[in-house]
Length: 456
Image (cartoon, rainbow, N blue to C red; front, side, top):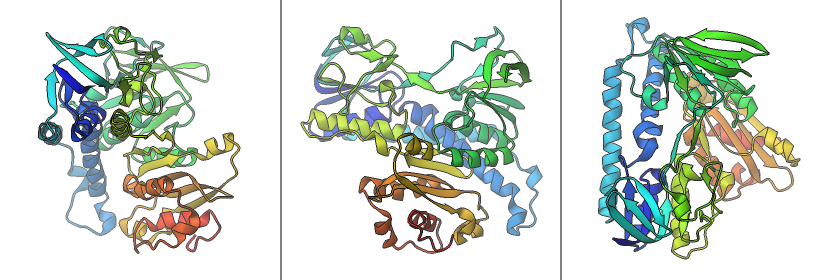
């Protein structure tokens, strides 16, 4: 079978690329060895947020008396893990079924199986051969298992995939890694009732976040019961815990199960990239700002290129790759990719952190506005949080925005559009924000960059 475009991998990057190619009039096929939707829909973003939603409700229920509700017994409420697993599976089935329907509606041929290159233009899928004028690789990523960490034969080690399939909540969990994955899992496991300790090699949890907000997030997580060990090195995972080193001292931590959450690595396993001549560096496929690989008609999007391992990045890269195939002049802008951490309160950010701006010797100013000064935050009973914005002093260009607040991911949308349209503090000043809303914090923080915040 010959196609105009063949896409390898049906995750958020692959299925979006396939649909966009078909919409552009290209005869398109999608090769997928598992279920469409990739890690994000099946064992990542969506299942995790399903669990986190339950954790949020559980926290609210336990806090009912503060909102003058009577007749409840917060101590009696718990989590039905079997029911939660069923709810998660229903949501995943609905979404993956929706993706399958979209592919069918757009007449994308779906070929089931693992793909491998036999030449720069031909893929072998089982006993079939698929050739294409252009090929987009979207094979995703796999969990990282650091070689420096020794695993005992009886080590009780799981990844995020197994953690989302737990039928019974463990009494205690040791989480290796204080990045986004580790922190989100630590949050909902602790709220559900497990004793959770997080072990992070860096001195800061969420190393890619702004240090000021990461510190606030750590405090909020500690209030939820999570214990952090930062600046430590995990050396060994045993059958009943793990061994770590801190300030030269070797210590042992006992826990029922250990969760490996140090991150993910590009996964091009079995693709036989050398037969296509596709160049890789440290396991990641090398791409330019149009997602082209070292082979002009082969593209790589999403986690497999190792740039930004986020579902929305993969989807956007898929669109850029297809536009390039169609002859349009479009490139990726990796400076405006948002990140979110769905704990309570949420964290969300885009652009440069304060530390990065200083390292680049930029002439910038910082505006801050605390949620404690916002009427809506007070009525919601959640004043832990901050909006922090960095702007360039001379031009007013937004360099970065960092939010800790309920629904911070939704609030960040305004800053994403603002950065994309190159908005300035003066332009934000004429945009009327509804009252009382949390979005007023953005307007106040933006005004604060030029010393004009009213309610600070």
